[in-house]
Length: 435
Image 1: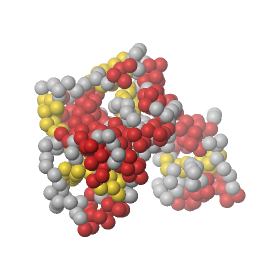
Image 2: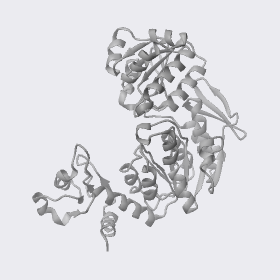
Image 3: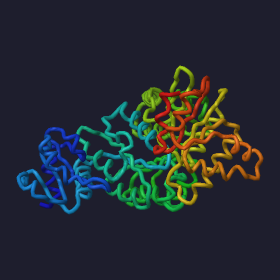
Image 4: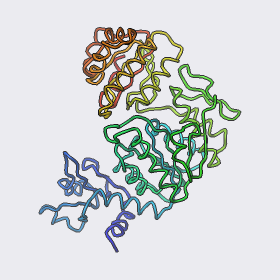
């Protein structure tokens, strides 16, 4: 019996895992992960004392000797966690839908899960725990009662999706879209497409089914040899002021989502529900009742303003989509509070200048925050376009979210519709309570 099989026998008796020594449920297994600023091995004994039944470590110290019967030493704790998750997934053989994409994957995952839950017992990724640690932890929550699973997979460098799909081994897959994000890690837009396409590669090799946006040329180009179930936005939108309403078959779905860009996410969920034989009425009910959270396309009404909070993440593709939608919403007194788009490498200045140009062309009042935007504004002040140059010379710039908070103290906007969007690191998600 190898170590993974031995550990699996322990996991069957103690089917809860933790990687945080501050959270040690009674009878759980602690995996002593290491990072740049922490070493879980140093807390393994503490985890056992707090209630964990077992701990997996890849370093040993004298303090552990007393607890040797409750410890397993492996070559690498993270690899072991991933191998255990894959083994558990293979044992249960639950049908799994794998989901990735540049934008919208978390919202789409939530919508798909809401639809499928109308008929099935579904396990799905919580929040955005979609990386090399979150994915195996999700899989280890599978039980024999689950009839389907929806597992989200994220990536910021080449090969990462390949690693994750080899753990998840999905039967079905969906790439929501491909766009300009994490260019610092991927190197180029083509690198983004190749990495996201690693989900298709796995499904092609193993005979899986792919749900695909039939209007997305980038995805269609890499879909040869796959069994495809297509969906597409062909004039489905019937309302967007500010909530999205769409026509699906002969039914109208009134969502709680902000943004035309969400129509593909809604159609993907409806199509997947239909594929898995969820009743049409139930699909519409699930999509109509879903309310977004986690600062993703959320609508918030305060005493002074209406807010569109999309401050979880930002890249050139999602920023442009948000601004296009914002410019098309038929409301007066618009204000866009935008934060830097991170991880764009050598493309950063150009992409931030493109956003400034878009703001200028659509005559949207804006507050811009962060060093990337400040550099782009300075460059745009000498633009050959008088429209862009004038905008750059008059736009308000801030160093960070704290600077905006200080400004709001004496200059709170009133009676405005405000779009708040930026990468998570800009912390613009801390602004809504002040607006």
